[in-house]
Length: 301
Image 1 (tube, rainbow, N blue to C red):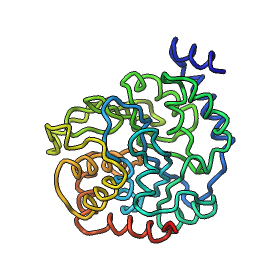
Image 2: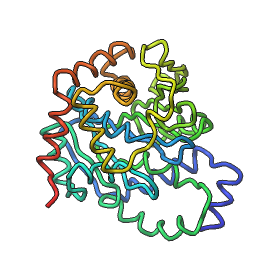
Image 3: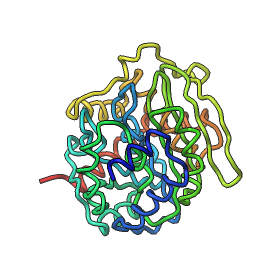
Image 4: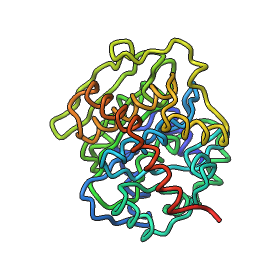
């Protein structure tokens, strides 16, 4: 298995190989059912050259507060602060039953799905991944394995611009209804406010490729250090600050990614409108209320 994975990575994975693995692992996942016919996931592959704070996790509360059902699927980070590390620092219980996750989605349009709790088959891959020091197909599989059994739409950040060529066919093959794939400069798996972001919108009609320029949207910030990774405690504080109305580069980064989440879902037709809706969700207190509602519901003991 190790040699097969390293050889696959050396020559470059094909869309068919990634799709087959993703479908197999998702079929083996613990299913989550919800009344919502379509759900959104917002996540990144990780492994990017430039490591940001937990942008998509914080943005997911904004999107959910606007009535879009968000099934945020994620894990811990081997180094730094993954989405699960943030949710734990916010005081939430990570391990939810499928029934709890589905009920949360039904009633409040949000659930955090801690990957180890829904993918028992992945435990067999852990020792293999530890044995391999280089990137393999597993570095791109995580975001493709959301266990919710509804139609999927997705904002997916990727660690390399090359994945913008590979993954559009993969997301179509595994049944994702609509997806916005992004890679931001200078090398991040998020939509960037310090440089342009290459984007691919994948729909049933095909692919639309475009550039997201924060300058044109009035959200440009020149200093990358303003959006760099934080430890879990600082990330939790930043989440509350941003959703509580503190202005600056972090807020603008979260707003831009939340607007892209709305675009990925199909809730807006253009980013300008999405940005206005997301800013209003913060300014009216709706986004912070959503975070507090979720933390209160699943407060850790």
